[in-house]
Figure 1 (cartoon, rainbow, N blue to C red):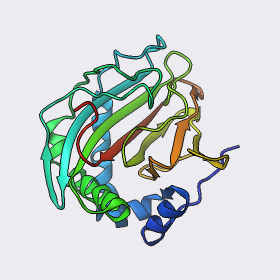
Figure 2 (spheres, one colour):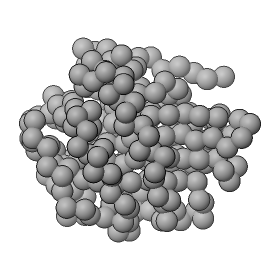
Figure 3 (cartoon, one colour):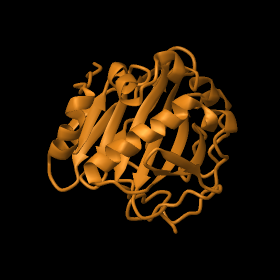
Length: 242
């Protein structure tokens, strides 16, 4: 059985983030938050068909493709940073922490797209509302998890924090799969929730200091399938790893 999330409106989002550490937005709320139309957002989706394989998976799998780019968002100003490795400490990622992982950058046409710029500005504003206005060091990850090998793991590291201030997970596409349930838990308590994102351009926003999260493995329904997501992390003071 698929458990649907309890969607929030943009007006409820900040209260929920402060109260429980997370909020889930449906596609209409994402459109309202970003000022984008659904065709604007869907125009980004074809770029997920051109993601290179992730060569750094330590579990021996071949189910993940990704691109990664970094940005600094100051108010409405967005600056793309020189391409850099993705790095996390082992305290936050026991499987892949402590590694300088280099991924291909996002395609320039996507970075220039107005919808992409609107997504970054909108989530940066959420971060400022929650944590106080400041420059935000944003890392963007385009992920495709596929089931060509029989099973795909969206979070092979298990339940985790990312070591940032705010995390936004946008579901871009979900095709021919079962599983992929999202689970959010208090970082310092027993409470937790589980649900499955199924609608393109629905989103999960997380106060990374207060909650941990994971997504369960996916399996094919019929032929091979996939789950595409955009993960944005926002951190004050600089990128992880200096």
